[in-house]
Image (tube, rainbow, N blue to C red; front, side, top):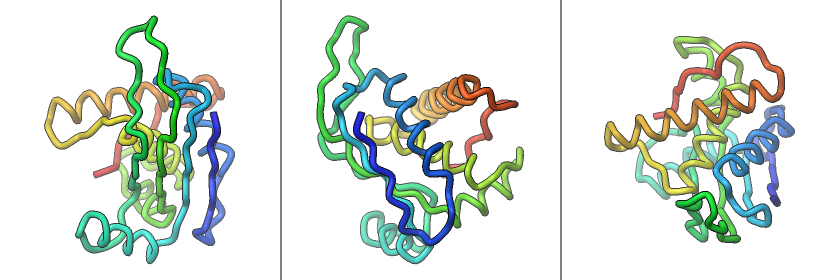
Length: 165
């Protein structure tokens, strides 16, 4: 799995954890090991520009996903996953820090960025949360992936509650 993490935000973030959880999520979703992903970490201003340009919405957001080859997890266990370019995930640590501090189960900016990385991966794989059933599926899968990764790393407690919009 080729995953690049590029921090352009000026904020110190745990890039290794972002890389590790992205790799874990892609493996768990059975994405081809030669697929490629890019994660870019930007500041509030850059995220706001992207949010306006691509979503026509004001203000910065927490995570945006830009799919390339529209890869999907294999439907069957014996199906060979396709190889390709997943796309880009853009994260904003300033928004993540605010969300983590305001969450029902308060958590750190880095924990929020880990959650947002998984959220972004799932969006790249075609998951969405516009409808209640879609939201239940995506957020359930997101929690299972984050909890599995945290357990594998020996981190205590459950994953942070979803704060993404």
